Image 1 (cartoon, rainbow over the protein chains, first blue to last red):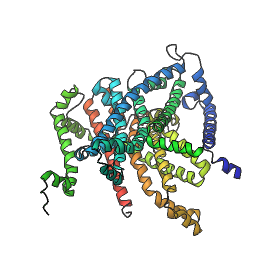
Image 2 (cartoon, rainbow over the protein chains, first blue to last red):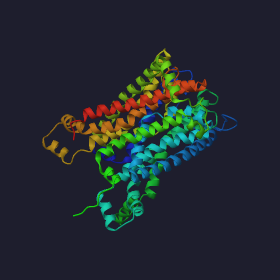
Image 3 (cartoon, rainbow over the protein chains, first blue to last red):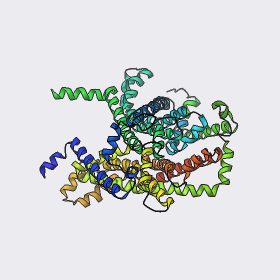
Image 4 (cartoon, helix red, strand yellow):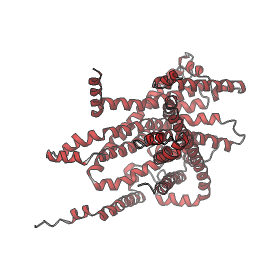
Length: 278
Length: 276
């Protein structure tokens, strides 16, 4: 018993046990489905079947294997999501700064910022498509709007979290306003900014995939709906579900890694950690 | 001592009441400006769109009034899926948080898995759920509703379990030590200390998952078998090029989202009234 408890403190092991547990449950269900259904692969295929479809060399569409289809479309979806994500990130950060700089802008924009959070932007995807007429543009717009809110709201919270003592210190240095921003406010808001990015990254990808489903222009979402309509092997659908889940998780992790590289607070943490290690 | 008389701008910026009033007046003014620009078709000229795809606000509202009975039927379907899914998902999320706190080692691994599930795009989740619920009922409307509820449920679990776990574990210093020194039973510790402590965290989670539940319900409708719901109507009407009707449903979707949030705020204000 004690041994088990000790093992429970190892994080990777705990995760591994859970993953194995889920795989077991999945496989039991898959065997059940396979026993009663005529087309089990539509409902719940075995995990090895999904994994095998990645390396299967028989073509599924236009002479491409499943892996080639998924990979090329994943890249297309990700690139489009990234453009919208970067745009929303930039605008969100600038708006948060402007709101901090001017009380009037904050009062003007804050209720509308709240409103963006409350209304279902993804539901508006079809109408934005017909407004812009171009699927690429609407993808960027939707990804940008979805990124915009969490970044702006979190960054503003970060800018407001700075203690008065720090302002007083800067005041005693006779620091100009620009310096207060570059030396105190922006470094202080970085952790909040990255929290916003971590929330926004999977959302931008979801938005990009959803817009894909609206029109046949490549991308993961497009292949997803084609495969669901049995225009190609159903395993492509399962591959895409798996890949989009992995991409979603990785996008959040990626933001964490970038934060570790960029943020001065994390850098100090690392240096202390190294010194402590010696 | 002579103090220089402050000019009107300085005095206004220091007056609390003026600032409060500005907080209401300015956004309303902005709203009116947008409305006027839209109604007078200035927005159409700037973005090069026509009145057909972006109808005037007055027309959207009149369409909405004309189709109110249809809209209400679809609203009911969407709200039902979102609300029930949110409720079940939040309860499950709380139970997961409790398990993670009760059996610290392996239980907290469940939290990691839940957050991983949260990163799966709804777009991928919705068709899977539609497939899985094929045998639930011979009635297409029932099984579509079940699959929609499942999607909303999964989306709601993660934010609740993460926040509730913080609520159960981030206690006031020494509170747990005091409970131990009273020889309090686990059940008492939970109901007297951990649960009350977690209530504000529950609302933090709901603030995220309430708007999300509406979005998930709408996206799940896109993939559902049975054609009902606000989201599905937006899509169907756009396919039929009935943009005014589609806009009426978009407005409805926005209203649902706002109402969900406002109801949550009111409930939060009532329940947390006696704290601070």
